[in-house]
Length: 355
Image (cartoon, rainbow, N blue to C red):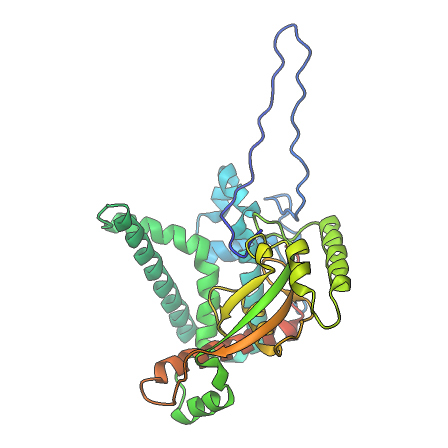
């Protein structure tokens, strides 16, 4: 598994039939999934996450998506095997994580989210911005293939329906964060943030990391209890094999890391910004909190369990507090405040994902 994942549906197994007069051919049985599975409708009341005192079930997830993002979801689940298969695709882990984060934010900041009109406006704006980016990317791909990239209104509507179905929860979460932490900061606030965090502007860190998969490589869904136990055993053995000063970290990463994209290079990841969209937020946060040469404790992301060694910090660009730099400073400050809000909500509610 790498830090980038492809969209995967479970494979369908064929069944061999016996010929007349011949011994029956063995029937191929699908192997028991090695990750946690929630099926519809038989598992609708099973837990997918625990947030504070509330246990979220599969039924809660389906209801939420149907009520806010895709009105035909329940009917399509009943009618189409391909739609039911989505519950075992790489959409599922993201949906569960996003719904749990939404619930955590509501429990933690409910009073600040009470203005329904403003909250809905922020969510709509987030959906519009992300869908426009999706359309722009689609049109760019079409032009690269020598096509016009033009879209009829009917095509746009169909693309929007599918986009909101698949990505509506993520846009809803981003809208909540935008409502809680907009970008309207005073010059004094921006100057205070800039002064307190000068390395965030123009700085990068280089790290090595070791990853152990505790989620399925194709879907990102949590492994079953047996798989989690094996992952924890591998992680413990890896931690024990790393020298106290981290001097053999690269060697261990080459031999033991399950991130196939970086293992061959000793887990090397260069040029991480503090808020880097290319990498999981938890990984960037850990990398920036370490000192050069330090090794982190276990860092959990949507891809796996990581150990991180920070190699060096470099300042590539020096930014001054000027009017020209203000948009960049606002963007970074907003990202920082939103990350703080989300992490605080997860911690206060003891958020636990079960899928």
